[in-house]
Every structure is written in structure tokens, then in C-alpha cells.
Image 1 (cartoon, helix red, strand yellow):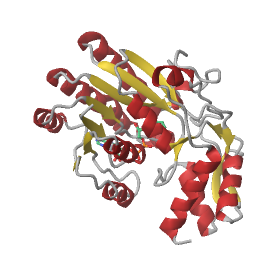
Image 2 (cartoon, protein in one colour):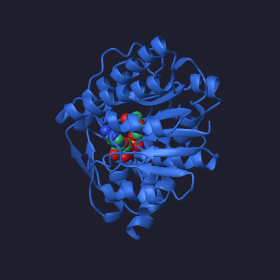
Image 3 (cartoon, protein in one colour):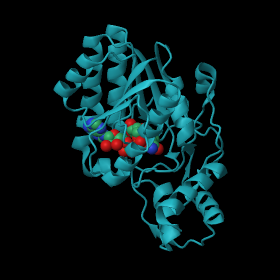
Length: 316
Ligand SMILES: NC(=O)c1ccc[n+]([C@@H]2O[C@H](COP(=O)([O-])OP(=O)(O)OC[C@H]3O[C@@H](n4cnc5c(N)ncnc54)[C@H](O)[C@@H]3O)[C@@H](O)[C@H]2O)c1
């Protein structure tokens, strides 16, 4: 792997993955449309921290097939990592169209460019949201045919289209299904970021439901490592990247945040969303077997690093 295309390079996971690829000596062409779903200054901050000479950034939308074709003409990629997406379950109910055009059509655009330019390897970021309603721990061979949010439905569409291109054109595909990723410079629409910010500012934490929801939280550095390991030739494989332990509840996360910030929280309980899952829990035996991957950062250590980052941003 010498030169790769990484979409969503300004994103939470994309920026970390870019940094790790560069640390491993890989040339990275990063693209992102820098949309304003959340504060663009955070996306720019992440990009500004990638200072390596082998990194090139271009503001390109994966919905723009002509721009992608031009990019593929100018570069010979060994791997395409598609991390660009409209992410977030709740916003997908408000604005399903952009999820379809980016997550499904955008993925198809990339696969088309790969077909035309004979790019061999595709790594697609997918989601544990596909497992809603299925028995735990979630295994990759469960029939994920009943997504309960537009977000999950469009990710399923991308997974299936990638299979079609593997079958027709022998593109080697790894689908990595992430489980609630958290860490420094995270996503401002997700609970780890929201809770840390509110706690440090002494504001009540908005909890949807009663706070007993649990997630198989995975630290962002571990996710970046697993994503890069998944770039090896595998045929077509779907692989969970999750904590793999018993999931942690929101209350447990808040308690750790209190411990490392030294602040006491107050909660503002709000109604649960219809498309929210109660618990997620990954079976990660396939990632261990195929990639030799398992998470290295404990939840406690990860929350400590997250709080430290928020403190550094808030000067408190
Ligand atoms: N964070 C999680 O817990 C989680 C869990 C499961 C799956 N995922 C998946 O991981 C990937 C990365 O997610 P993230 O948490 O870093 O989110 P993020 O929103 O921080 O990153 C996504 C990036 O993609 C960019 N983008 C969106 N639409 C684009 C388009 N049309 N063209 C080019 N760029 C575009 C955004 O500007 C953003 O910078 C996504 O595919 C997401 O669905 C994330």
C-alpha cells in the first residue's frame, strides 16, 4: 500500500485514519466536502493537525462523479477508504435525501471510478446500526435486512453495491462495521462529545431515555488501526470493529467523565428516539481471526483522554 484515497478526511475517524496511514509511510490523498452538519472549524482543526508532507487535501464531494474521475485520472490508488458519509441516526429521519445521495450514490460513484481505473481494494465504513433488533452479541452473518433508520438503510445499500462490484469486477472489498466510536476531537452530535462539553461547562446533560442504553464503545485510535488492517486482500468480507466487551451504559460513561473532570453532573431526561437502539454489543472474533485486531484502549483510559482533550479546548 503506497498511495491511497481517503474520503471523509476531515471527519472524526477519517482524520485519525489519515494520520495513522501517514505514520506508516503511506501517501494519502484526502477528500471531504466540509459540509456544515456540525461546526466546520472542528473539521478544519483536524485537517490542520495533519502536517505530513505525504498528505494532500482536496475539497471534493463524493456525489460529484466528474471531480472524482479527474482525481482518479491524476492518481493511481492502491486502496480507496470510503469514510465520507452522512452519519447520525436521528438527523437521517429529518433529511433522508442527503443520506441517500452521499452514502449510497457517493459510494457507487467511487466504485465506478475504481472499475474504470482498475483500483483493486475498497474499504467501506459501515455501522452497527444495521443490527438493530437482532440477537447479541452481533455477528457479521446475522441477516441485516430490516434497517430501522434511513442512515442504516443507506449504509446497507452501500454494502450491497460494493458486493455487486466485487462480484462483477473482482474489486476486493472489506466492510468495517464500527460500534460507537469516541475519543478526542470527536463528533459534536454524539453523546461522548455532548456530555463532556456540558459537564465541563456545568450544564445539564441531555439524556434520551433513562440513561440505561448501553454501547460497545470503541476508541478512535483502535478503529483507525482496524480500518487500515482491513486493507489487506480478503475477497469480500464484513468485519465488526467494536469494543467486544460487555457494553457500557450512559450512566457508566458519565461516572467516568465525572471522575476525570472532577465535576458533578446533572441530567436532563428527554424522550427516547424511535430509531435509537437500547444496547449494541459486537462479536469481534472475526476481526481477531482475519486481521489480528482487537481494541487496545480500555474504556476508562479512552474517557480520560477524551476529557483531557475537551479540557484543553475549553481551558478548564
Ligand atoms: N462515529 C461513529 O461512532 C461511527 C459508527 C459507525 C459508523 N461510522 C461511519 O464512519 C465514517 C466516519 O464517521 P465519523 O464519525 O468520522 O463522522 P464525521 O461526520 O466526523 O466524518 C464524515 C466526514 O465525511 C464528510 N462528508 C460527508 N458527506 C460527504 C460527501 N458527500 N463528500 C465528501 N465528504 C463528505 C464530512 O464532511 C465529514 O468530515 C462514516 O462513514 C460513518 O457512517 C461512524
